[in-house]
Amino acid sequence: MELGREYFGPLWKYIANEEITDVDYNGREIWLTNIYNERYRVNQSYVDENVTPAFVEQFTQRIANVVSQQFNKQNPELEAETSELRVTILHESIARSGRSISIRKTPPVIRLTAKKALVEKYCSKEILAVLINCVLTKMNLIFCGMPGIGKTECVKFFSQFVPGNERVITIEDTMEIRYSVTNPGKDCIELRVSDVFDYADAIKASLRLNPKWIMLSEARSKEVKYLLEGWSTGVRGMTTLHTDDVRNIPDRILNMLETRVDADRLENDIYQAMDVGVLIRKRKGEEGQVYRYIDQVCFFERENGKNRILMAVSDGKLILKEFPPQLKLKFLREGISDPFFCQALEKQLVTETEVEE
Image 1 (cartoon, helix red, strand yellow):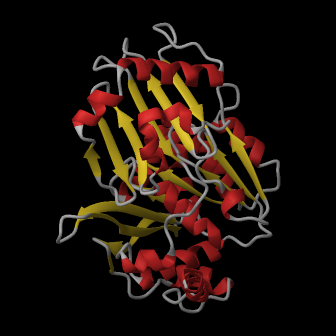
Image 2 (cartoon, rainbow, N blue to C red):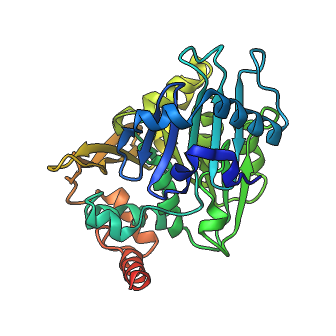
C-alpha cells in the first residue's frame, strides 16, 4: 500500500522532509521529531489554519478506506502501513484531548553508518570494532534503551555484518528492519506477526526454516522464552528491549515469563543463551544539541555454575582492557586475535568514504 501526497495535505511537507522521523498530532498541536532526536512543536498558527477538523476527518476516512476498516467508538484504533510509513490514529472517545494521529517513518535505509558513528561520537572506534567482531563471532546481541532511542537502527546497522550465505529470519509486527532491502542478495525470510500468528508462533516456525540468525524487532512478553530456546540450540540473533541498564536485562526477561516456574528454570539459560547487552542513551552537547551514544556494553557469562555480567563499556567509555580467556576463545575460533581491531570496520569506513566522494 502506498499513500500519495494528496492524502497528507498540510502534513506532507513534514513527510517529505528527510530529516523528520515522526509527525505527531495530539488533537491540538503538531510535534515533530528529527534524525538528531530533537523534538519540537510546529508553529501553532500554521496548525490552526491548516490542520482543521475537516482535514483530520478527511485524512482519517481516507486511511480507513485504504485498509478497509471501520473507525468509530466501537473501533477506536486505526493503523495503516506503507513501505516507508506507519500511521496510527486514535478516536477522540479514547484520546480525550482530541483525535490523535501518529506518523512514524520506517524507510528501508540504514541511517547509522560507521563514519557517522565516529564523527558524531556515537561510540569510539574500539567499541565499534568490538561490537562488529561480536557479530562476526556469531554472538547474540540485545540492544536496550528507552522508546525511540534508536534500538532498531542499531539492529539494522550491525546486521550488515552477517555473512550473506547465513540465513536471517526477521520477525516484526511493523516492518522496520527491512533486511532484504538493506542487504540485497543475502538469504533472508521476513515474517510479520498478527492476531492469528503471534511472536511465539513466528519463532517456533522460524526454527523449522533452517535459520542461522533470528532477529526479533522487540522482546516484549512470553515469546522471549521461545527466543531463548532458539538461541540455546545454536541459532544466533539480535533483538531489542526496554530497560535503562544492561545489568537489568536478565531480570527484565524473567519478568516477561508467564510463570514463576519458567523464571526459576530459565534464569541460568538466560546467561548461557545471551552474549552481549548494549544500552543506547541520549544527552545534550555543549551547544544544546541532542545526540545518541552507546552508554553501556556488557557480556553475559555462565561458567562453573555461576552467572556473571562483565561490563565492557560504562558511561560511553571502554573500561575493559583485556578479555577473559573464555571470551578470547570465542573470538579466536573465528580468526579474531584482537577484538579491539576489526578489518570489516576498516573496509566499511573506506567504502562509506568512497560513496561520499
